[in-house]
Structure formats: structure tokens, C-alpha cells
Image (cartoon, rainbow, N blue to C red; front, side, top):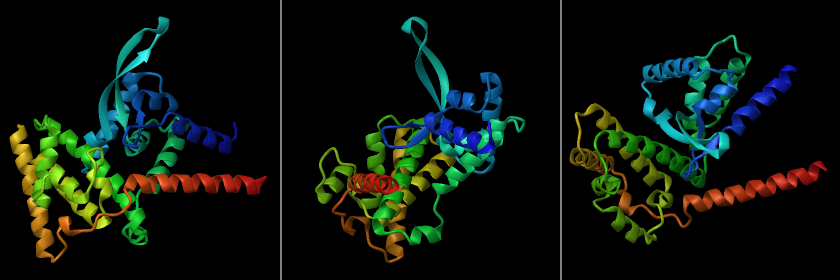
Length: 285
């Protein structure tokens, strides 16, 4: 097989085993990735995963955000169910695994390039962010808030949180002096609407700061129950609010609510891209 053909096949292999969760986030299963990288034994591949986790930790990045232990049910002989342990991986986790894999394997070398390039494509420099339109900033920030909220929920659960409605409400009360329901009412949202979908980039930025700082504080603090975790979230929310006030910024509750939700913007972008692709195909004929 020629080099170019192998590269195309490698990219297709990784994209074919990619999964999308209910929030639109991409992920890979370690056992499926193992096969694509040319490994046959789970024990040997687990050693590579552990090295990748160490690399993640050494970079001061939350391991649990990128490597999530899961149980999956597979169909085996006679259509029977079999439960197996697996790991849900982000694209960054796949990149670290490829970096720590056997250099003797051709698949590893190709994977290193593939995941490095794709991971970089998903990141924006400050200069690139500034050039984005407000709608693009909202989409980017909303996806970032979604990922950070997932990481926050994970560490909060480890700290004893069971009632996540109460936990998230504590943060909103600190930042807004309003409950989540009061924010929804003020923004004239329905029960099914997500508050973060109806924020401008400035308001999303304040909430991302609240989320990330709460996550950091929960990691460092000696907290082992829901009450303390909620108090911490509320404390951080209030601290962010004080910072905004000291800087002479606009309080989050006074910021305008966009007419379109982020979901609507994403849907419109998707439709626009689909039409553009159809037009391109017509021109190619």
C-alpha cells in the first residue's frame, strides 16, 4: 500500500470509530482505538494508556476530563449481552496515547500526526478568537462551557454531590444573585431551554470563569460532602461577580439576551454548509 493510501485509510479508520454524545461532544472508545493502532492485547494497550495519563497529569491537565472509565454492553455469540470495561477518550487523550505508543508500529506514527493536527484545528489562539464574529464566539464559548461543565460535574460527584440541580444553582446564585429559574424567567426562556444557549460571549465568558475556578477550588479543597461543594460553587460565583464590579464591567443579569440560541445558530450554520457542499458538487460535475 502506498504512503498516501495508508494515510487516507488511517484517517478514515479513526473517523469511523468516532462517537458523538448527546451534547454533541466527540469521543473514542479505548478498545476500538486499540485495534486501529495495531494492538491486540488489552493488557499491553493499558500500559500505553497509563503512560498517556501520566503525560496528561505532568502537563497539569485534568486526567478525568479526558479519560473516563465506562462500562459497555456488547453483543456476542447467540446475540447474548456481555459487559466490558472500557475508557471514553477525548481527541486529546487519543493524541497522548499515540505519542506514548510503540514507535515500531506504522499506525502509531500516522496516528501521532493525525491527532496532533486535528487537536490543533480545534483550538483557537487569542488573535484568532478576536477575529471571530459575535455569533462564532458564542458557538465557540458555548462548546467550551459544555466541556468545562462536564469536567466540573465529574469532580463535584467525587466530592459528594448528588443533587446537581442544587449544585449548579448555587453557582448561579453567587454570580447573578438569581436562581437558575429566575434567570430563565428574566430571559423569558422555557423549561427545556438551556440558559447557556441564550448568552452572549461576554456572559458566557463570566460563566466559563465561574466553572473553571470552581473546578480548580474543588480539586484543591478538602471537601467531601454536597453542602461544602455547593458552598464553594456559591463562593466562587460571588467572587467572579465582585471582580466584574471592581473592573467596572456590566453585571451578567444586565447583559442583553441574544435573539437566537446557540443551538439555532449551529443549525443554521450546518444547513448553510450543507447547501454550500451541494453547490460545490454541482460545479464539479
